Length: 187
Image 1 (cartoon, rainbow, N blue to C red):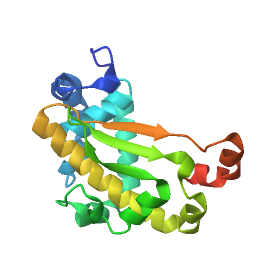
Image 2: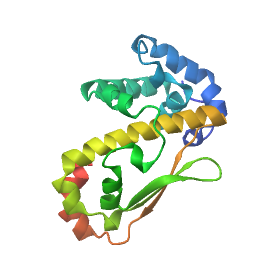
Image 3: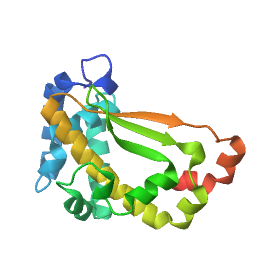
């Protein structure tokens, strides 16, 4: 069964209230116990949109996410960031990571979406690789905090809040991408 709206990636309030969201919630009923925070309408709508409205595919994708969270103890990460403001100081090491990656993501567009600006061609790949485990841990904390804020804002505004990505690829070349292929695979 697929969503009856034409363009799933732009899901809004209607999608968060649609019967497919309820159907997805019903399909995932057994997995919900003790994890209610993961089963809010915005997150379910994102999984439906990412799977072209197919409830069964969204459920399988969601189950893979739950397994990844369990295997990587993401609940402990969530507990450390829950309730913190969406600010660079909220995650230890994030300011250094953003400098390495030439990244800014603490502005909100007038329509409420998060603006994410990344200058990939200026990223310090050598430093990222040298500190890869730290980078991965910091990124995990930041993404968990970001998702909490996206879901909360979506519920507050009654529509799905998204991340508007602006990527500057200046400085990237085929040679640099091939040279940094190990990093690209790991990311």
